[in-house]
Length: 221
Image 1 (cartoon, rainbow, N blue to C red):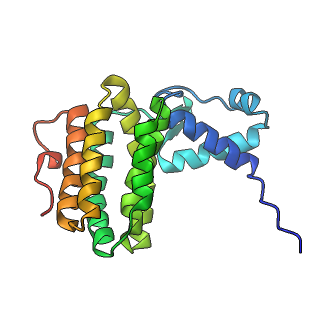
Image 2: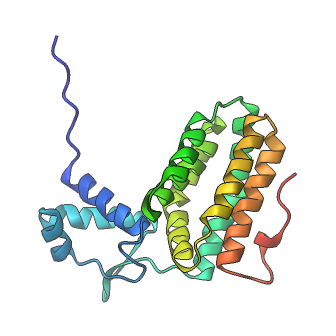
Image 3: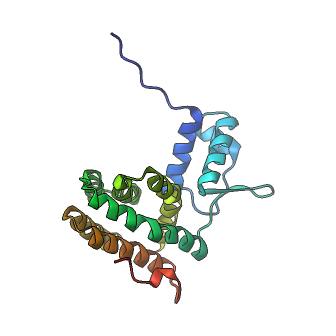
């Protein structure tokens, strides 16, 4: 019996993944123009898969398409950052609380934490950080909740990329990650959720300070 070959990713998916990776690792910066002909030449494809990839990225909030200015990487400002992180604050701690109460092993989160510690550059560390957070909320038992958090995941990563470029804070966040995971693995659902809430809130407050707003509020008990 012959094995079924692994499907080759489409040109559009290849271009989509490549552009997204460049944005989320800081190689393409907010406000930078994304020219179809230039990208097509770089990736060795026609303009069609590039155009489709850019449309998808616009749908996820990573790029902006303007009739007059063309396509650019989305700019990150305080309002955008707070909107994205407000969604995370509302949903992510509750998802982790549910995951812990369901007895999730969180092995993927442990693995992502180890990859972040062993990372040799900012790009690797950033991608491991994203996987750590996703591994915390994905086993919540509610696929819709997981998909909702996935929808803001790329935008949150873009905010993080911009903030880390201005003020690297890896060591502090790594320590917070270890504490969140320790509480979760110990079965303390409320403690882990509160620690995660404080972690998310403190990051956006450091990166985009505000005297008022929901981010300064106490986390859920």
